[in-house]
Length: 463
Image (cartoon, rainbow, N blue to C red; front, top):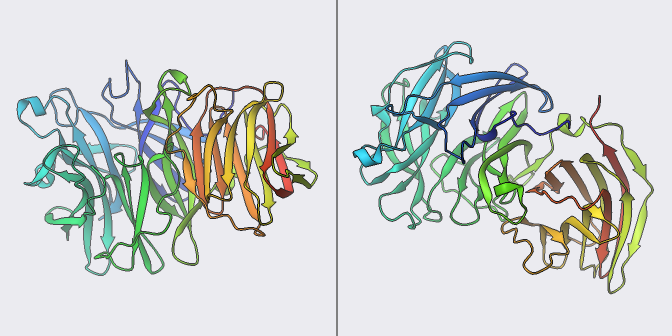
């Protein structure tokens, strides 16, 4: 089967350290073999390159992991940037055996390259050792930017204070340097005491606004961001401070030729079972990030991804009159396992909810569905029916979404085998599904009326 989203055969896609040059994005990432489980076999960084997020070229191992006796037994996340005539990678060297030997498990390390393909480790690790008062086993994921105002490099990383792992002392800390050699520890960069740990911190500027992204795993296990007019803060929380839900993790961004892409992954579930827990690692999915007029951020599918599908089939405009119950309109039967759907939806005052069903079996009524709760202001994913109770507990697979009567909402959905991605109004929601009850795709409404126009279904990818 042909796939759209990227996952190297026989491995699972982990954290991505993106870089771009010319017209090419470089996806430095971890490939977990799951021998026998996630993090079972140590890994370094591998590399795939793409121009369109549809076609990928494998470039193999970029930075090999060290031996079991070395600090970088595993190479955890970091960042890649260009400075002083070289490409630099600051990364996390992790040795799972070190804590028992009284050594820090996680230390920041450095490698350089002249071509992005071949890397030399410099062993500059002591500069970035965990600082007193911080947990030496949670000190990772460095990210470097150039601070134009102060004319210095700023390196941020995820950390937490020493103490019980349950304490919500997660923070982003910072180092500064004028020359990439001598670094000064500057303490906390953002320490909200909201999460137990900050992972994969990112920092970038669009116009007058700076944006700081972290991934957390103690509250809703998702990415969140803050915004500020200054690198010194204060860091403001937008009303919706996320990009996606529980099933999109550890994303970093990179901007190339005016396009900023968010590089995250959709996790698998244990045993390929919808009822099981999410696992670390999975499949890469790209979101394009854009800035709204109020400065907040939205996401949408990259145009090259959306344009990768075969010519669509048009569906005539229709309305659904649901009254005080629920009514459904079939859009397509036998959509297959890779397709895209788009339509515009408008509803008057009083509508309770509407949604999209896919992998539907019309005889049994079973399907997977995205549900727009107009009266509750949220978008969620769930199986339908969610029976017998509790058949599926997709905790965190929902997003806040203020839905206004009379406003047209452009709904876009991509299904690639076990991954479904929905976009509306700058909000995204990914999910991983394994049960495919049938091949029907439909739109439904509950407790009111819904007008649907511009509906198209595209089956399969272009040849």
